[in-house]
Image (cartoon, rainbow, N blue to C red; front, side, top):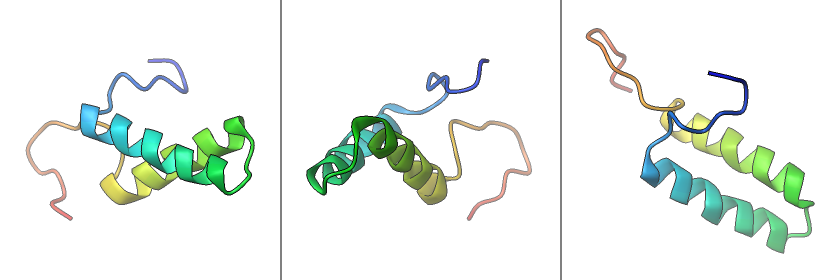
Length: 59
């Protein structure tokens, strides 16, 4: 999977990123930096994309 690939994220995480990005753009950030901050925020909230396997940390 190449860097920046968003295929491992759930639909909910993608929607969250879109809403967060819109908020940052409304505050005056450029599209590129708003997108980067939005995905960083989603990663912080959810811990990244889909993950499988036993022993996964619960929270």
